[in-house]
Length: 224
Ligand code: SF4
Ligand code: SF4
Ligand code: FES
Image (cartoon, rainbow, N blue to C red; front, side):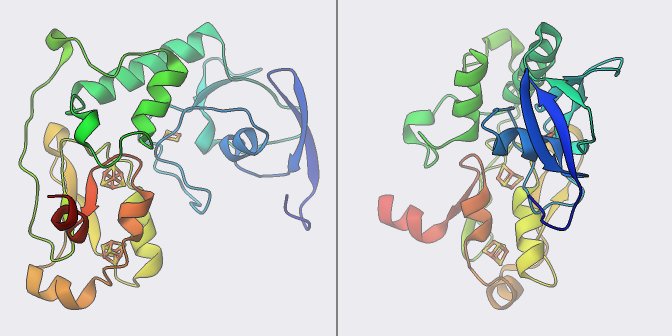
């Protein structure tokens, strides 16, 4: 809790919680061991992109569930994280996300057992394999153009965590989102020759990726 902020009292799933006024609601839930599925939020983000649409909660007085990563706590707030409507919205968002991802190769993926999708699937009781009819096959190539990184757009959940983290490290971030619709993907701004000098090769983007979309080339060389 922020020692300089006012303290507010709220109730989440019947549990009385104290938090700093203005703190991010998703963060407060997670800090109090109330798990709300999320992929695109990082506590350092002032303005989370709210792109994964997984972190829905119901708040008393609100007409419908809202994304908790875009809400701040206030005195007297009453929050429910597990109503049928909340779960329905979370499952729909998750299934939509899976429908455009190639997730049938978990066993050979670098993120196996630490993957954000596996964790959320377990939590929501949803199968990771999407029924064939609901699957939108985009099947894009892995991008090997970066000198240090490989990027698999079919595994990417477009959470933008890598972009945010790289922006914090580099005054000029090396990553961005490009294209539209089903073809939206992370892109490296520069040519490989320029990237070799400008990218620090720090691996922070790989570390923060909740799935196995970004990998360090050295890893690929080691494991084949
Ligand atoms: S390796 Fe580091 S510097 Fe390079 S793109 Fe990733 S976060 Fe940015
Ligand atoms: S590469 Fe990883 S961290 Fe970056 S947007 Fe895709 S899933 Fe998120
Ligand atoms: S964590 Fe809130 S929308 Fe992704």
